Image 1 (cartoon, helix red, strand yellow):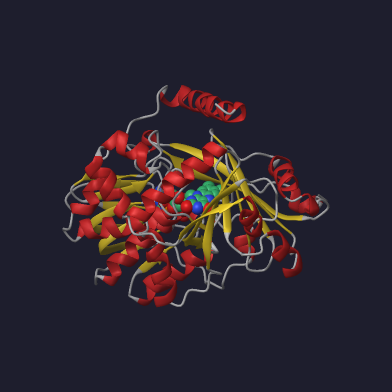
Image 2: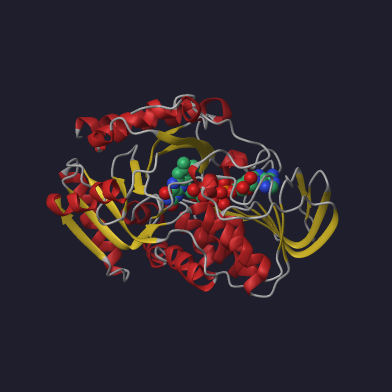
Length: 439
Ligand SMILES: Cc1cc2nc3c(=O)[nH]c(=O)nc-3n(C[C@H](O)[C@H](O)[C@H](O)COP(=O)(O)OP(=O)(O)OC[C@H]3O[C@@H](n4cnc5c(N)ncnc54)[C@H](O)[C@@H]3O)c2cc1C
């Protein structure tokens, strides 16, 4: 691939504006919101304007509550505005793992909520007329027979929970999804799909404001007080509310000292090619579905609304932003689509998500009036929308579905702050090696 000088430089994480990504480049117009200045009161204050925060806030505003959102940088600045855009149903762990770990009642209850996050996204796109390049269809691609077996089981379980939009594809059919000959088949979920994630976040933020919600940008919460009416402090002011919901995820920093030890900040990288045009992209991915493969360190890709290839993969367990994003990902693109050799990479970026030891999202309460959502473990487009709804339900007194998630045990990473990164990387190396050796 040709690598233009400017675009090949990794972008430092901007502290005041969007990081240079394809999404920021193609974002729908949105005026910058003011920073918080002075003292404000609300029914609910939400920290963080990503999927989790905006989803929670919008569910609550739809129920008639006065909601204020405090965002450190810009709406959708974090993972929600920089991810792969894939609407993937289910969770980071499959049903059988969840069953073995948490028992049948929890596993069944989680399974029954598996498809709700995607439904919320589609409902909101329709209800608020959000322009975010939504397309239906997500494909899980298999390299090996054991991965096919794993996907067969996923299909069986998901069908039992009412998803009838599933189809196992053989090698020839898989080629109609992705022209690469790499896969022996896979599982198509037409109830999955993909979106422009930043535009989805911006659209939901505008919907929140249309219902009277208030969003302050450039308003990093530096500390909170948990009392009966919690208070969130920023440099310019404070918000006092009946309830505070903390949704800072991997970027929370030190604002709420109890939270960072509950997850590890991990980075993943994405590149987009130059605009290729429909003639080329229809040849690469004729059906227009998104795709993720079944490897432990997976590749995920799709075609964007303006006909580029958007390709992501890999993780860095320290959460570091690598200097060589293109060098890491271009070989994966060329292995998948050799015909793209020589095409330019226009955008390359890195972003962090919050990984839990269980790989399950983590929600709960730090006090009667302080809630938190984090730990999507790289699988949050649907999950964050679901957890926003469940948190809104809990705040309104309906706890049954919320408690299914909130009662799942979460564990700190072994090794404490000093050793959790090397220990987790070692674990990942072990599983990656088993995959390579086919054991
Ligand atoms: C590269 C990458 C690719 C991914 N691809 C996919 C995918 O294709 N499909 C999928 O399902 N999942 C994917 N994910 C995961 C998904 O993006 C996340 O699960 C989801 O976006 C998390 O949303 P969030 O709102 O919890 O966190 P974020 O989107 O990170 O939002 C947190 C927000 O809180 C703000 N904030 C933090 N601290 C403070 C503070 N103290 N005060 C005020 N504001 C604060 C931040 O600025 C940020 O805007 C991907 C993640 C990454 C990193």
